Image (tube, rainbow, N blue to C red; front, side, top):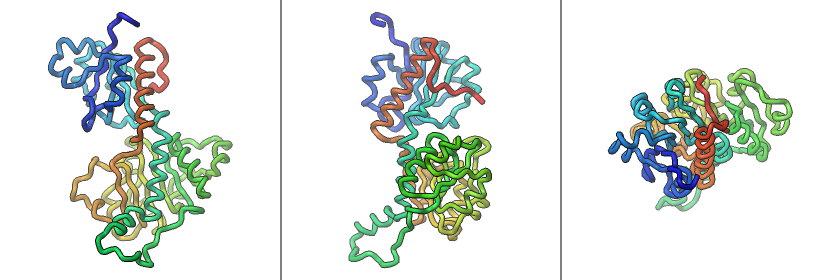
Amino acid sequence: MEGEELPGLLVNEIGGMHGILHDHVEFLKKHFCLITMKEFLENKKNMSKKVQAVYLWWHRPVIDKDLLQSLPNLKVIANSGVGMDHLDLKLIASFGVKMANAPCAVSSCTADAGMALLLASARRLVEGYHLAVSPGMEYNEADFLGVEVTGATLGIIGMGSIGYKIALRAKAFEMKILYHNRTRRKEQEEQAVGAIYCEKIDDLLCQADFVVVVVSLTPQTHKLIGKREMELMKPTATLINISRGAVVDQEALAIALHTGVIRAAALDVTYPEPLPRDHPLLKLKNVIITPHLGIKTDKATRMITEEAVENILAALTGLPMPSEVLPS
C-alpha cells in the first residue's frame, strides 16, 4: 500500500551471467525493494531483516543453511523454472519458508525447443550450415542425407505438461506417438494427440525413431538413459534431452554415438553446464548441443517473472500460492 515500505526481495544481481533481466527490474520494483547479493553481503546487519522473499534466476543465489539462517524474516523463495534438483526442499521447509516454481510459464517454450532440436538433428541443420558457409563450398554431396520426421515414431519419456505439448506439436508432423510416464494420462488426453502408453520404458525405446527425455532429475531418474537403454534403441534413432544433463549417462552416450549404437543426439542440457572443452561429446558431428535455451524467449522469461511475483505476493499476504512446491 502507498506509504508502506515495500517488502525486500533478494536477487543475485541485475544483469550479468546469473542476474535478473534488466527489462524486468521496473516491474519488480513496483512490488518489492530489490536487494542484490552484493548489497546484502556488504550490509548484512541492516539488510537481513528486510528480506522477506528470494527470487532465484538461473539457480542463483545459492540457497544453503548459512543464507537461510541469516534471513530471519524470509517467507518465500520463487524459482525461475520448473526443475528443483538444485534445491534442498526439506531444508528450506525446516526454516518455515515456502517454495514456488514456474510451471505455467515454461511449458510451451521448452516444448518448442524440444521440437526445434528434433528437427535440426533430423535434417542435420548445424552440419549443413557449416558446410554452406565453408570457404570451399561448391555443391552439396549427394549422400548428405537427413531422416524423415513426418510419419516417424516419437517416444516421449515424461508426459507432464511439457511432454504433452511436445506430443501436440508432433501430431502436426503426423508422427506416431509413444509415451512412458509414472502415471498414465486420461484416455481422452491420449486420444487428443494419438498417444500410446508404454508401461515399460524398454518397449518405447526399441520402437522409437526419436526419443525425447522430459523428466525431473531425482535419485530415480539419475542416468535413467544409460548404456543398456541406448543399446535397446534403433541404430537409426535420435536421443533428445531437454530435462537435466544427469538424466543421461553422457559417457555412455558419447560411446554410443561414436560406435553407431544410435544415430544422433540433440541436447539442450548437459552435466556440468557448460561441458569441459575437451569433453568427447563436443567433438562429434552427430551431436547438437545448445546452452540450456529451453526457457530463453522474451515472452517466457517475462511470464516466469510474473508468475514468481504472483507466488511471492500470495505467500506474503497469506493467500494460497498458485505454484507452491512441497518437499517430498
